[in-house]
Image (cartoon, rainbow, N blue to C red):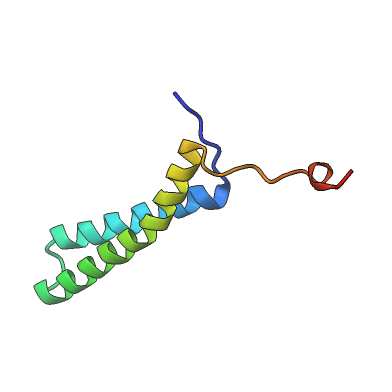
Amino acid sequence: MREVPLTLPEIGMINITRFIIGTGAGLLLAGKLDNKARRAVGLTLVTVGSLFSTPVGIAFLGKLRGGQTQPRQLSDTRAA
């Protein structure tokens, strides 16, 4: 199994987007609100969560594939 180093803000963004999508899906499935309000809020939360998940997922896949290079050290960039 590969380990992918994630920073605390990246883990937070992943969890927040999952929470937003889950809350929206829960509202769509629940019957506590009237149908019009429940559907509007649920679809909005699922859409917003999905839109925020896209860049987070792309960044995660870039790290998983090793596409992001490490920043170069100052000593590596100096001219001899």
